[in-house]
Image (cartoon, rainbow, N blue to C red; front, side):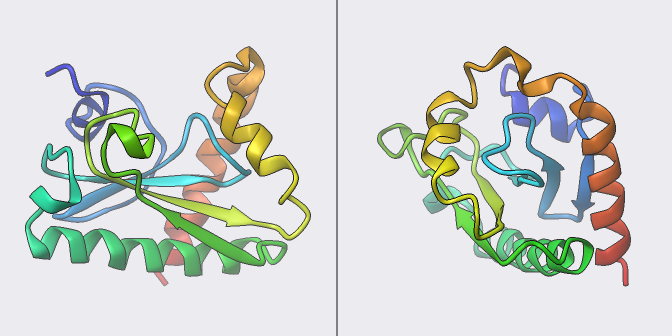
Length: 147
């Protein structure tokens, strides 16, 4: 299968998993818009929200709520959270597989967000030294979700 998110769901590609159930798998985003950015992948390969079963869509949103609550418990500097689904190529969906972005907001980061949005796939330093911090963030969130 050529879909990168399907490969992650099947364990063929590595990812730092935050949460998983029968509807979705949440991982730390490799190209974060802000520190701690998580994406929730639907378990089924569907390109649009309209193609998901109601139970799967509900499961994704429930996971998003759990993750956002865990984020705020783990890091008190997180003030709010953006929930974002890009549904289709015209909506800037890069991978044609439904996924929900859970993006922590810190209050100081508003000016940085547009810049990160425009450069997150281009910056070669985006991954440097992030594997350990992504693993630690995933573990901390997982522990809080389990509470």
